[in-house]
Length: 108
Image (cartoon, rainbow, N blue to C red; front, side):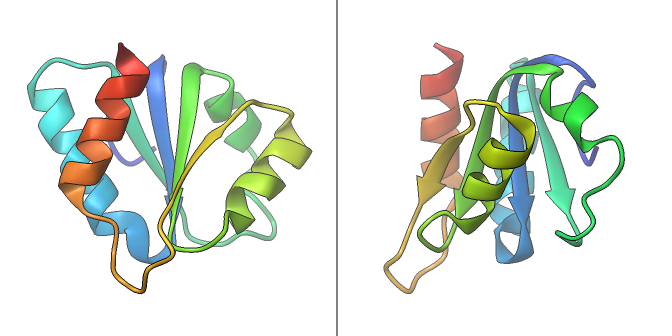
């Protein structure tokens, strides 16, 4: 776990270049008192041994990706959770403000 409570409403799971935007968004939301956390994968195979336990500790899982959703497909298949994606395929990074808006929608 990178940031936030070990159980809660929303977990933002990332990998690769989404790290900075996710961390910044989660820090802002934690400062506002929201139940949100950030976990970031450093490698995809093998997954961390406790990943299933982490994923099932939150009401919602958001996976931001700068592609068509490669990680979310693996997570849904392997851990059978209804993770939600936030995909951006325009050649520009995902921003903190975009994630803050999306996470607040999930918290509502």
